[in-house]
Amino acid sequence: MSNSTSRSIATPLLTELKHQARAVGFHRLGIVAIPAEPTSQEQIMQARLQHWLNQGYQADMAWMANPKRQDIRQVMPDVRSIICVVLNYYTPHQRPEGAEYGKIARYGWGRDYHRVMHKKLKQLSLWLQTQTSPQGEPILTRYYADTGPVQDKFWAQEAGLGWVAKNGNVITRDYGSWIFLGEILTNVALPGSRPHTNHCGTCTRCIEACPTTAIRAPGVVDANRCIAYHTIENRDEQLPAPVAHHLHNWVAGCDICQDVCPWNQRFAQPTDVEEFAPYPGNVAPRLKELANLSEQDWDQRFPASALRRIKPAMWRRNAAAAANQGE
Image 1 (cartoon, rainbow, N blue to C red):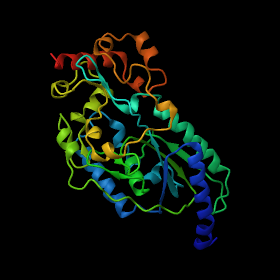
Image 2 (image 1 turned 90 degrees about the vertical axis):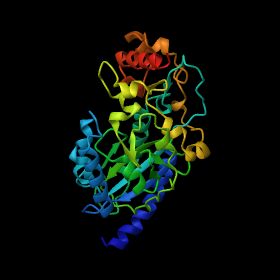
Image 3 (image 1 turned 45 degrees about the vertical axis):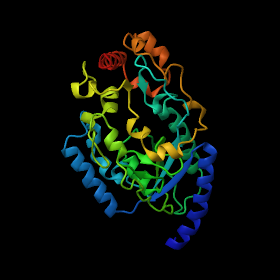
């Protein structure tokens, strides 16, 4: 089959794919065409990732050094396209003022996004597998939602969904950075989308607002200084003093660099995904309760939640550190 014939077949498939993605519930979709060898943009990404790793900015997240992250072809040798999707998770609830309340990042307010995203990715993948490949071969798929060695933010930008901002998050024109990213790798060759351009301009609000100076340079975040990393991933009995002294009541993640972003302030819009509605107590958790959280309380309070990654002892540690900062 000639390339022109393949493209003519792939275009209707792409149109139907976008329709199916909307039917499944995704808010945006973009495509990255994957050539046999890494592109110049991939090579730049590889170099930046390796430099970030060499500086030790991954802290204890050893999985970030998986060599598959630097070449998507090692994840799926037959990959010809990456289907990148977006789910908006923003809800308009606002945290109350008061030193007695802890703060939880918005992404963790509702149902575990992995479960929501995986269900939708599976639906779209199964549909794609039933279609006719332009190349006349069985369609293969493999999907991820922050669950594999995939540089999801880089690919989202290459797919035209948004750009990697100075705080390291992907910003979209439609929803700001209140989004979850997912990918379907496939052996089907689809027409690629135009990569997104960067629109942060001269703004440095996120860099200036970070209380622990975790954003070392535009797009470069040092996990060793990051409140989100330490409240979620750090398993030590005590938080490091430079972080503990600047928690600002954050006990699970941190939204400071997103809250100050002009794009989020202007373009955030409520999600239509019901599962992302906040669980009771997640918008305004009381530090005193979290500082005494039992195993049973933890199990009841965070059902099917991404916050289950934070174990009871970590909740108690984080809440105690936040409460002590306010004294």
